[in-house]
Image (cartoon, rainbow, N blue to C red):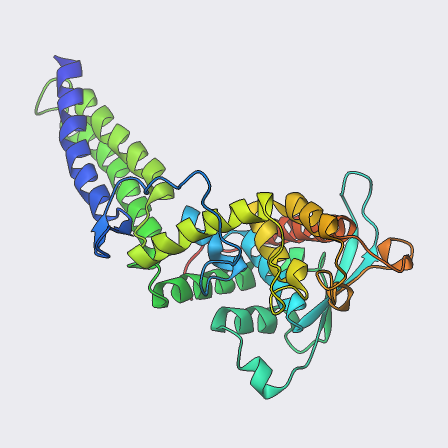
Length: 342
């Protein structure tokens, strides 16, 4: 009898949770261009690839479309992309060890014209302001002590940006927090059920365990709550096609795309985890225009790669990848406050 009560409690509660979960399903475009909610994404064609990033989707927030959360790796990619575009310069001050640990880098701010500054998104302006304050340079390792609240501020701006862009129906953080509050409420309700039902019925613990199981289920589901719009889902699928190009394709060959294409696409390759394949493809092409200008935004001391007259895409990528991983670790371990909007 006890297990029947527990199972019945969980089954009824699971049906309610499933209804809430269904409201948060991602939307996709159907064959007629209409937006429909679906449990699973359409199957990507085996040979689907595109040689340009998703339309208007920056590398720094692309993965938010897939995991509904801004992480330290996204902010590290944003720093790299801002350097590439001329808003700051990354300089390596100390070499990491053979395992990529240690090392030090400086971020040096570039003062740009008002017209160029106007091209920044709000979350990019917030990051630059929070990184530098009134300083012209900052050490990456120093961010470990104080960057936590600033990381949260950048996260919140990115959440707002992807929602205002129409990629999500509601801010992903708000949805995640709402689900975690529900899970906390269910866990507390389980304790109350066990105490209050003892004098009223047999087997109160069975009902309490059923409610507790619902709370744990809601907590797990909070990490996978979506709510993308059809436009957001289309961008996510385009990103998957672009990742396939970076991994298996070759750089675009048109005259306007070719110069500096390695540097333009490198932040995307880093967040998509295909940077080695992208660098190898660019090296095989052997065209100086592809590598144009990379050392203008990432300075490596003479005792590493800059001492050579020509730097391969693979060598440059290895140096940037170490910076990317190190900066993400520093930001992720900074004394961040809970993700709440101030």
